[in-house]
Image (cartoon, rainbow, N blue to C red; front, top):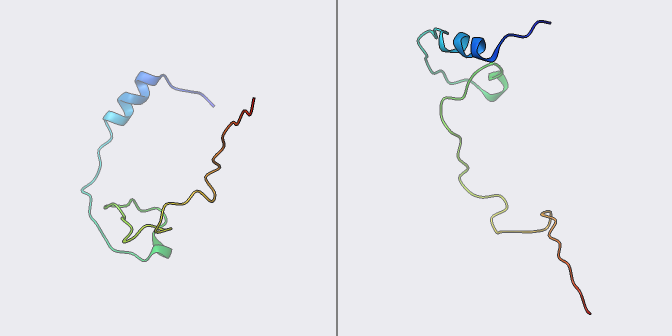
Length: 64
């Protein structure tokens, strides 16, 4: 496989012409290959309280 120069790849990307974008609503199961048009924001945090059960806190203790 032949690689192209970085500057050449940037030139290719700059010259891509995109067709007019449109949004459609699809079920999540049918969404493969689509690009998300809006951010998804959760209604609430999960877990709802700060927790360190799986965060892996560690400390060094020296008694001497």
